[in-house]
Length: 182
Image (cartoon, rainbow, N blue to C red; front, side, top):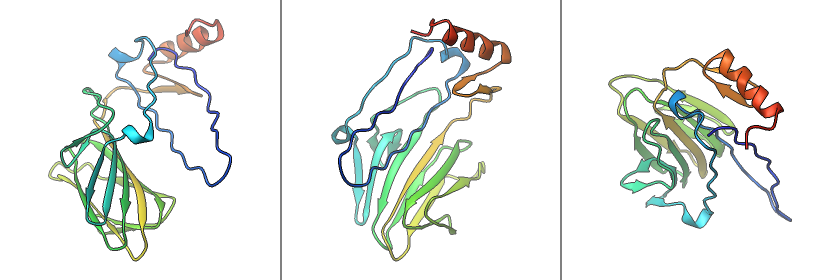
């Protein structure tokens, strides 16, 4: 929404902390709406499970499980996928959606192509494609599958500001500097 200002202050006293932050660009008609924030505790994220497969459905839907977040205009899909060694997971994707897979533990075969840890596979937008197949190798794997409908709009970006035109961008920066984003 209009002028979301945030700060990350993670709190953890021991162990390894992993986190991913993904910002969704809004359609031009939605950019200047009042800002909103929604915290979703881990226990409230729906899951899909099959033998060797656990999928945390953060946004969108997977195999009949609706995610914690739904956005009709961009139809985002945000899945946290955990695969046991040798497990396979097939996810339908709407034709024309932009999509990528980011492997954060282990390694995967994505549509038959090897994707090692800390690498991303950008999926092709083939009109005849109907999804993606992920396969774990000999070790457990974890990955994010992210997809969404393209907006088909111009993007003007400066630092954390994302608008559609240079003029809108300049107005947003001026609003921030003048304290008008609350």
